[in-house]
Amino acid sequence: MDPTVVHRLKNKLAIILGFCDLLVNEMPENDKHRPDVLQIQEAARAALLELPPLPAHEFTSTLAKGDAHDK
Image 1: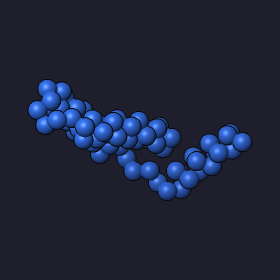
Image 2 (image 1 turned 90 degrees about the vertical axis):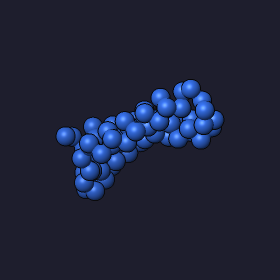
Image 3 (image 1 turned 60 degrees about the vertical axis):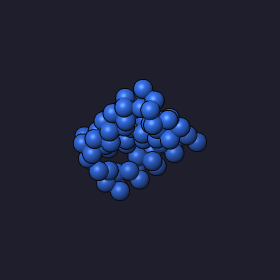
């Protein structure tokens, strides 16, 4: 899988996990939506485990390319 795609997917999953963490921490234990949020959180964590690790050199070169376009 292309490292850029993996990086983008991991970023999206990190956002989902971050929002789930915020929601779970703010929700009362008996909130009717809590099980749904926990299921989303579990699915996002499982999806992260399915993605291959990013090689350090690929990640660095991807960032360098992105930086060049930002200037």
